[in-house]
Length: 137
Image (cartoon, rainbow, N blue to C red; front, side, top):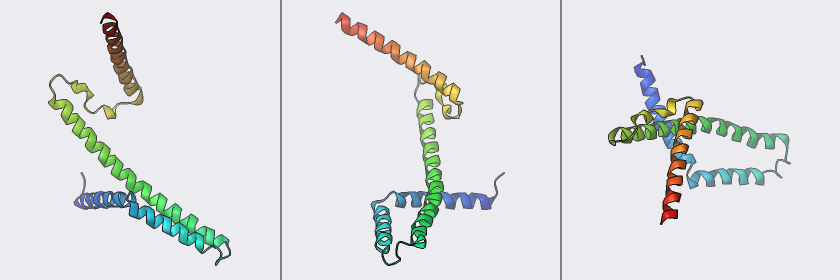
């Protein structure tokens, strides 16, 4: 059972990750990153292109990349989960839809491949029927 503290952290982290991912994907963050690189490059002659000067950009970009990966992954996980839930609801609500398609993202790779082949077979049959109808016309 999850604790209240865990729930509060999860909610806070989800909101922070969404806002961070939105900001990181904005034109302003690109401009800020570009300005940082230009400033760093412009300072090269002042610091004689030293190892420390190079280490600053290498360390900074590594740390930022490392942290951003987790924020973006969290956002993508939540977005994918929400999308799957919406699709599951659409499948459930449409009469005649195949309810076994609900939660297929939890299947193994082999099971997904088998399902993909089944639908490819349906597609191939449709194309064959469609071709023969065109030839008759």
